[in-house]
Figure (cartoon, rainbow, N blue to C red):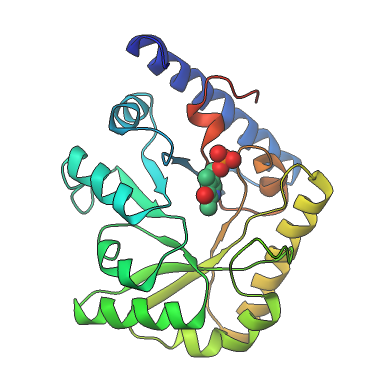
Length: 241
Ligand SMILES: *Cc1c(COP(=O)(O)O)cnc(C)c1O
């Protein structure tokens, strides 16, 4: 399916160059510097071999949405040591009973979608003597299919969450409605404005805005994203960028 390995790696390499160029152009259109925007490769649909190819092609930060698959990849790659350049983020729904499979193994948890989950992550992190870096996931667009805090909820809960000892809130994350560029733009600018408001209320830096996927990352960068999460456009040879 993937073709011979060398050509797949070449595909990954040329795609990466094109993606970084587009991020750079989108940042410049918004008067930003592309160094403010990090790109993670979402490896949830590919195997360990493709991740190894991607590392060879220059990717260093990866995202997974399932604790079990995250564990499988980390084991196969040989527990990525702290300080190593290859890191994984948890970007998907996290159930409380899976928290221990994730904390201490990922650089950042993007998907803290409720105050209960924030408390549970904090408690389990504290028990291990660590603090987990995390983003609060906000359902800015209000689509019923999407998880996360509503904007009102996140404003109401923020002070309690930022006081949790085992959790460091680094920013916000959202997902935009699919195949609707205007709605995507409103969602990303809404996330940015919400972060501004939360900064005023909490005094936190909230540096990270995680938004933008394969179909909307250029809009996200124009609207202030600092972390785009790209799956299909990185790995899928059939994806039209
Ligand atoms: C799968 C996934 C992505 C990547 O989506 P693509 O459209 O393949 O780029 C980004 N974020 C989350 C939370 C995902 O689950």
